[in-house]
Length: 154
Length: 95
Image 1 (cartoon, rainbow over the protein chains, first blue to last red):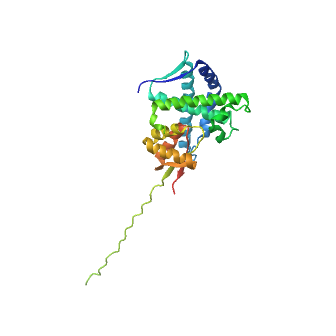
Image 2: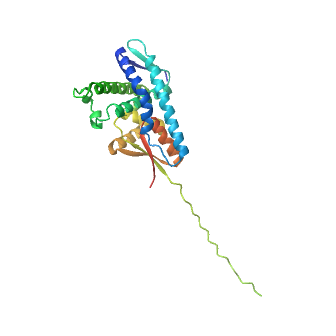
Image 3: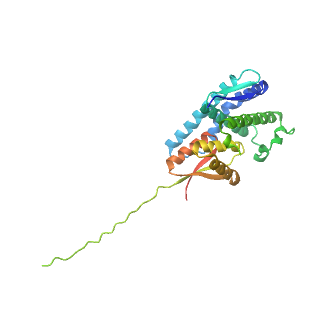
C-alpha cells in the first residue's frame, strides 16, 4: 500500500498539536487504567500491563512526531505504510478516550454521540474547545479508515 | 484337578475432561466509531468485513457480545490485542 496522507488546515494543526501536548501523557495512563487485565496470574498480568504501557508510550511519540512534521498550509501528515497508519489510528483513539475521561467525563454518552452538543454555548469554553478537537481527531480517524479499509463502512 | 476358570473382569473407563473454554467479550463504548470497531475486529480476529460488521452490530445493540470462544491462552492474546485497539474487551469463562 502506498503512503497515506491526512490533510488539515494550518490552524487545525496548531490547535490539535497544542492539545496533544497536554493530553498525550495522560492518554497513556488512561489506556492502561481502562483495560480489564486478568489478575489471576501475576505473570500474565505483568506482561499485559507492560505491553499496554509500552504501546501507549509509542502512540504518544508517534502522534507528537506526526503533528510536528506536518508543515505547510494545508498541513499534511504522511504515513509511510499501513502499519504506521494503523498505529496512528489507534493513537487517535487513545487521545479521544483520554479526552472523554479527563475533560468531559460529566457529559453523558448519549450527548457525546450527538453532534449538536459539540457547539453547546452552555458548556465551559475549555470543554467546547476539547470537544471540537475530539471531533477533529474523529474526522482524521474516519479519513484514515476510508483509505485503509473502505469496506469497514456500511 | 481342573483349574478354576477365573476370568478377571476388567472395566475400562475413559475420563476426558475438556479444558475450560473462554469467551472474549467486547463491551460497547461511545467513543470509537463503528467503522473503527469493524476494522479492529477484521485485524485482530482475522475475519471478513461482513462478519466483523455483524459482531460490531451485536456489541452496539446488546451493549456487549462474545466475539471469540476457545482456549485460554489464545483468548488472552485476542483480548489483549483488542485492548491495544482501545476496545473494552474482557475474558469470561464459558458456561
